[in-house]
Image (cartoon, rainbow, N blue to C red):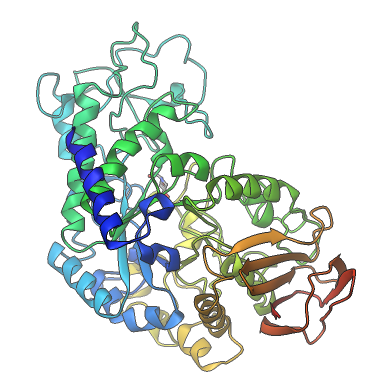
Length: 575
Ligand code: NOJ
């Protein structure tokens, strides 16, 4: 038996003996109850007055984070970096960047978080490094040494690639993936994102024998890269981390449109991981839960990238912007849900019982929910109701719980001028804590801040919202308490759209688990709306969250009649 198979067998045997569930791609039990809070570390809390967030700042705010009702943190990369892509260009995977602290600070963060029942996940940038990473500098020097084949060194741009752009959905590389270099070793290397991010070599799905640089996925170079990734994982797991979100997980193997080879690579790594760290979670940036689930991931995002995304609900197109005339969650009420519904249900049905889908409230790459004229408390409550009552794993992006606003007109900060989404800086501005200098983020002078703080005198802050029972923060807390206490509203509860997919306002869905049933009504539009749904055989419908002062739910023999006030959400418990 190979090392990996022995390990998997042992894990299964241990689970069988202890009676532990082995569902959800062997996810540990806690994952079914996980609610994540994403922290962009440069912008969360600065403890030493240099204008940039740090680990001590996060430690100082753990009690607040806990108070929201989340139980797991995910940090964007905190490793040594050139910061030409917000930390996604790593120079040393084994050390915390000095701007954030030290490896010892990370251990302290984990200890302090664990004390409070919060888990800590990191970002695994598996697909590429910085061009200043020591592996790349060594690889550049030529063949026949340890890091030679950690990267891909084409000797030319082949004719069939010339003039073609990388395909953003399939990941098939194009001429724009070849970066010119004067390294002496080879005139080109293959990059993943920016030119300064050379792709690590996981091989090609079908290497072309005419292209000497295209290696099979099990060649020595690609295999050494896989083992290095495992070393990185083990290094941080052994320091107390609880798991990883894997950056661009779907695109590690080159020219792999069906993703079978990438799936194979991740099956290898994830089976090793599950055997060694059965309490750890693996989350993918893949945007195709069916595929990522087969690869062994426990959670996958459906968001702005890939075919399976939620763009039509919040933006105008993949990687796009809030556009009132087409986004479903807009007060104009001109959007549709059909496109998202078809993509979502296909993925939901295929992965149910195997892995979780996450519809995050936002992230460091996409516009915040509070953008353009989607900016009132009621509007944000409707969107928050959606995110926290859907099945799968919620991820709250820092600041979304208080309704922080997407900032327009910002400059390019550390690569924030993304390839698809232009102004990523607008979603990365400092967290707004209170009314003190720089909204309590930092004591530094304005020009030393990582990015400017929202200047609006009425900007939301934690301090203000904490005191206001009607705030978005307290609404978020209320929804998370409800979710925690209800099997129907949990990650595993069933989900069914009961309103007509072609009549999207209001959107009405049922969450259920045995006798526990909740009905969620969402009307983002500024027109009150009526809808009739097939009778749900309800004796009482009790409003548990949201506002039905302008709305009502009337159970009937054949049909139930629902009236939803303008821009409102209701969560009813059905008995
Ligand atoms: C996805 C990350 O979310 C994004 O911020 C980054 O720029 C690219 N991957 C490249 O690493």
